[in-house]
Structure formats: structure tokens, C-alpha cells
Length: 68
Image 1 (tube, helix red, strand yellow):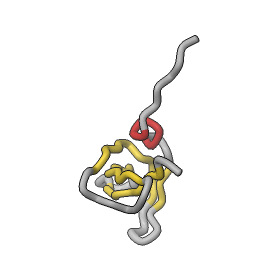
Image 2 (cartoon, rainbow, N blue to C red):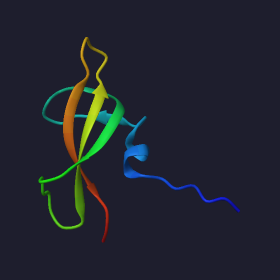
Image 3 (cartoon, rainbow, N blue to C red):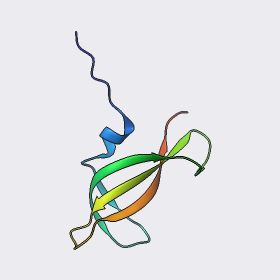
Image 4 (cartoon, rainbow, N blue to C red):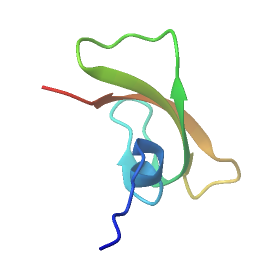
């Protein structure tokens, strides 16, 4: 039996993202873990690139819960 190994980056890519305060949405095309940004216990920060259906892709930093 083969087991697939997923990373948070691979799970984020291809998902739809909608910004609450920057007023854009689109598909996440890349994700990269960021160091030095703290959102709280059991979270990690990720820089995502979003294809916002415009001339340029948009970037945002998001928090991902990684534990209980």
C-alpha cells in the first residue's frame, strides 16, 4: 500500500482564495512558508500568490492552523 505525503503548500495550491479587506479573489498558484510572523499558538504563516484575474498576481500572508 502506497501512502501519499502532502505538504501544506501542495494543499493550498489550486484552492480559491478571497481577501476580506484587500478586495480580490482568485486561485492560489504558489505558497511558501514564512518565518518570523506569528499569528498565535499552533499556527504557521504562509505567503501565497493569487491569480486575481488581472494583469498581475496578488500576494497575501495567511495563517494556517497546524495543531490543536
